[in-house]
Length: 369
Image (tube, rainbow, N blue to C red; front, side, top):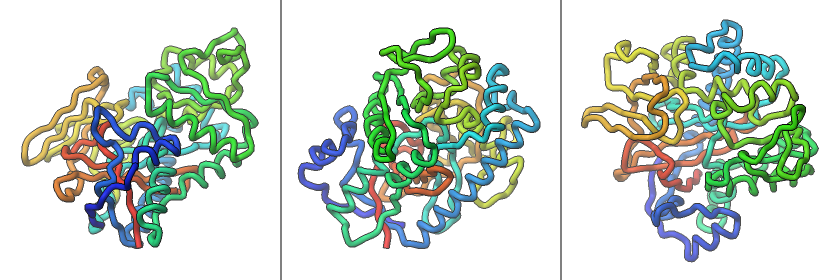
């Protein structure tokens, strides 16, 4: 695994916008970085695939364990959500996708840092953006990127005739992502409609969109925990199909890392993790159970402590042994491994000068031989 410095394509912004990628620049800084790329060997990609398959298997075992032992409170999941979680698991509602974040240097086994299982981002970057880049820049090489085709196959397997896709319009990345997901649904042969999450209505029996059309299937780029006091009982009442299924609340919770370590201690792809900080006699990373994009994470290491602010300060926290991301040319790099329909489907690299990855950490293309 190497970080290579390269020259960006001419008119790269225009080229990205031509495929619907409009958030390539954030606060006048490049979010999509074509001044570098990561080179992998085939066996390194194979190790990432194997680790992803293994983590998916163990995560499903954790879901089953939590439901069988009703230990939701350890994850700070409110009681009135439990029936919805159990119903979705009992009915074998299919998980759609998720993104594992690994620390990996090409030498040691990939270490799981977290699982973005409910509202993962970096999908368009991993899919069309990387595909366009390798076709233009490195056409003779390979790229682990089956994201688009796997999305289409997954929609076909679900078989929903019409899907409403919703997020908050103020959430720019999510709002720009919905048209891409709609295209993958349409390529699978089904209808779509993009709506704003905060404009969904309720008529005492069904959820309705802004045109008063009944919503039977909803893809939501909107966290389950934000719906804690909004719609749980109604969702259970209507039987609406929701993507992701409610049981994904267990996997999108950082407490998952604690339960994984309890059930599978010393697994080569896991790091020690606890709800009590005094059980770690080492540097640690403090994470909110419902946190996202690096908010309210603090990391202690030999050089001191780094702490990010954010909206999750009132959360319950968990503690994971510090395992610094590999540093290439001064950049700390994390690998996002996409699982779609339970299958490893591609990777995307994010990097930052800080060892904590945030929403603004640039995405960087990759290839392998």
